[in-house]
Image (cartoon, rainbow, N blue to C red):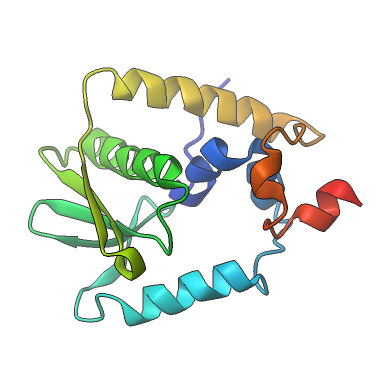
Length: 164
């Protein structure tokens, strides 16, 4: 099986909910009118307005912005910071595979004034490649995976699709 890359957003969904990731990859987009997504878009539009934003790499990785040797990911909350950190590491991996090395990342949550540095560490590349294999297997399935993270489900835009 050839391993396809996926967007950073889909990669981050792997850590939040594989079912949401599957729906989104299949083009079942229910997030356009979700309040949390709209708030995130507003934060994106109003934060770091002087920076050149939304840098596309290989037509699937959308980096929020970069400055000098740092790529930045902006989130509305630090609640799911593990998925955001992994998303940044995935971007660093993609850039590294394209010969752009010696970069670091930074997670920023403007509303909370939260900042965390992120680096691609030993072992991350192997882990990312293993996850990409699993992500591709999930994408090739004809049915979505089961929901396993009930604590985030109540605020998810896919809640009704999953539970009703």
